Length: 452
Image (tube, rainbow, N blue to C red; front, top):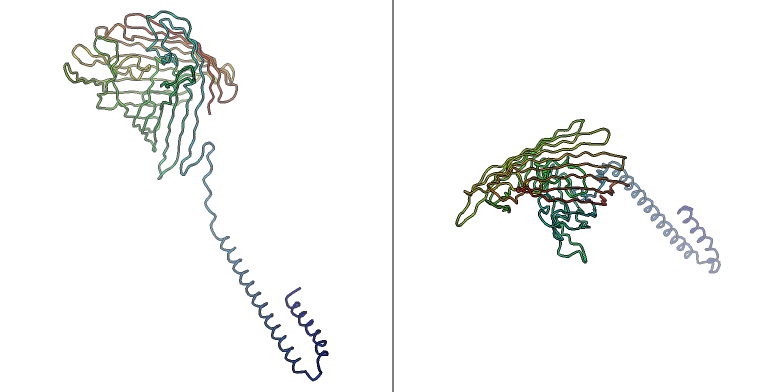
């Protein structure tokens, strides 16, 4: 029912009701009836005016809605939100990722020259430079630890048109904690890597540019073929362009005093170590060659003061060669003078002092070869041999100085599910002193590792 019908109904009802009212009054009162009709007509006119105004307002609002719809339709669509990364999460312009692994080791070791003290790093992983020599043979030593557990955090983004990334990485392998194995096996976090990259530049702590990481074999041990491997992480400034990289790295010189077998860690370098590397990638695998030139320096004050420096250098070549569908052969060969700090976890020092207080760089050659075979897609083994020979001058140092080391190891690793490895490794390592005396360690290791 429309409002016009409603108004007409009201008027009709009102007029129908009038005769009763008129009959109830005296006939001569016609003027009062006319006044009543005039009043009702004015009220109806007012109602009609209100209805007309309401309709006009509705029409105006409808036009406003139509115009608003047209504006929304004509407005450009908002820019789509950045796609969420496949892994990690976004903070501002950066994609943040984290990961690492949890690893537990169980080892049984037999030392020919006496057991290292409880908590010694030699009991946690293979250190050729500290294999006991000359001590009494003891029973097997059993060690459990989870210190190789690792955690890392990275960011990647484009800031001001520049590609910027960061990485911070920790493990618990190097520094023991303050507790003991009676309650909680001790472990403190140790900084492994911490750097920022801006386009082709890297600033911070990273693997030395002299090291070729891609050829490191798969082992249960922390390093594996330690004596034959270049291995160092330190603060540096690096520039990379394609397969070539060059870096200025933290300088540090380790010195053997004249006639002794001890170690002095000097802090007297004025020039950073210069390293370079070039990598080749081919269908058969990959290869790389790296080089280093460094200043060796040592200075003291007082009576018999020493102020000497010399030059150290080294070359390292490595390759990974594909064999069949999944197997591979990896090897590395490193040689030079004054590079002991970079090879075999400082098995040999960089330089030795002669009787006049002058530094002489110590030559060495080191290397390893590793063959990995897949028995099945989730079963594999590696056979690894490693060595280091140091060309010491017996006239300048003690006969208890490290002269050579070698090791042989074989393992079997099973991956029942992705990112989870269970394995065992049998290894034999030997250390030889300048006197000819030797000491060895035979170790059986079991491990479980899950990466996330």
